[in-house]
Length: 141
Image 1 (cartoon, helix red, strand yellow):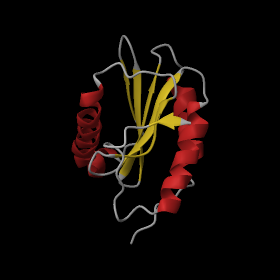
Image 2 (cartoon, rainbow, N blue to C red):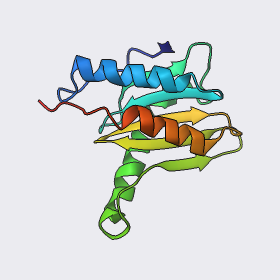
Image 3 (cartoon, one colour):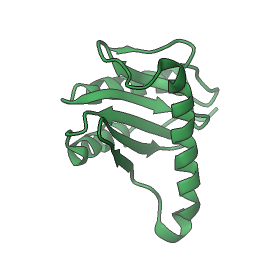
Image 4 (cartoon, rainbow, N blue to C red):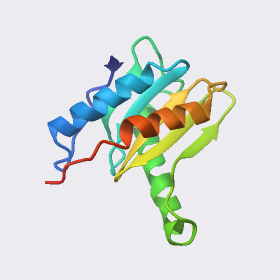
């Protein structure tokens, strides 16, 4: 299961409890892959609505900055979408850093945000994420 800070986890009216349950299950299953530290779904406002860090895994950044990081990831994604008409839609965004691999996979207006050890197999993780999340549709109210 996940540890999630309550102040970060908020739901939007367009995401139902059933949607969040489906997303949590997919996050949990993906987090079972080796070397993955975090799997979360970030809504269009940059708030964590499902998933989180694996139990026993500590974030590499200050916990107070996690919410800001989620918002930055969503903003970065939105800015990149401006090229969708010319280049096509984004399948995923991957960033390999010295201490961490960070992958964002869009699901509707939300982002699946994955962090893993830097030597993790990004293609394997992305393929598994797409398998788990592609079949989930988010209800609109």
